[in-house]
Image (cartoon, rainbow, N blue to C red; front, side, top):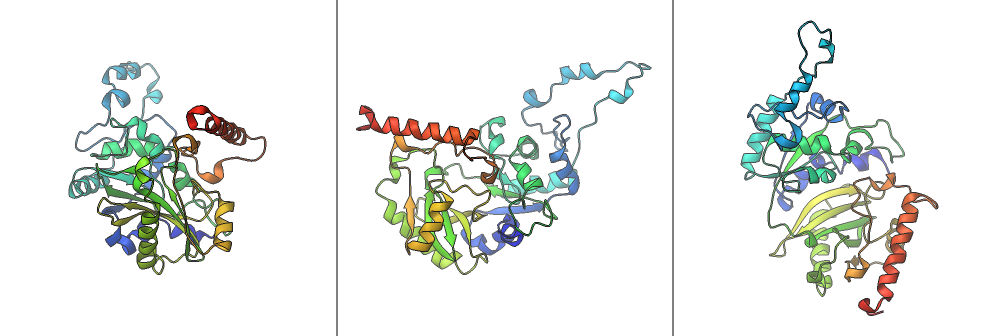
Length: 334
């Protein structure tokens, strides 16, 4: 994989080309001072808000605890005073305006990734944000975003740097009626759509049963008419969402292989499909007993050590044994 292939999957690169068939998004270039704030391993501080907005004040900031940091005059401990919270007034103002124009709630992500691993810290348990403070909290608490910030090109054969020159924050319109079962990952090799996988592969959705052919047709026609001739890479993946009125929307692009999860496939299977079958392999979770475990990890795929004897190797072996046991059980009809 080349750096250029990774760069083409940055949202600020692909969104302008696919704006008409994607979710409404506003993109802001981030100042380097904000990137340093995200990478700072010091005390967890939210930026000082110009709007006096404070996300989760009881969990992040408690005025009573500030007494612990009080230093009496002449004590000689002035150097131990905590640093004041950072402030990004210009960025906050732009983000506030964007949130308002997008209906009051957004889903944030950086060049490639969203802070899904830190959703637990929000009041809703989701990535829904209505203020700059909430966005900063999710980004600052996310470990998975370290990939974007420091390791974006680790899998590239022509790696020349560890990070892109500039970082961007994409604010995507939040849709409360979003149905996770209607999100799919599509795999393209040699400009051919070779596989489609249910995106939320850790859940069984009975509503998908019997709709495989219709969904395959909708996604293939969308790829043929809207993606194949516009996206410049030869090998890549893209995520789509099927709306209730059967319209297809692009959610994201990712490189082929590397840190992209193959979900209900393996990369070896996808290589074989692309070379042997001129058809689209469509996969969903077809039974509650065959849900594939271990894919909700926020760790990039190529950071997982699945070699024989590794922790992940043993975990997946145990999970496969448990799935086989459940399949053979009377309750499963085995």
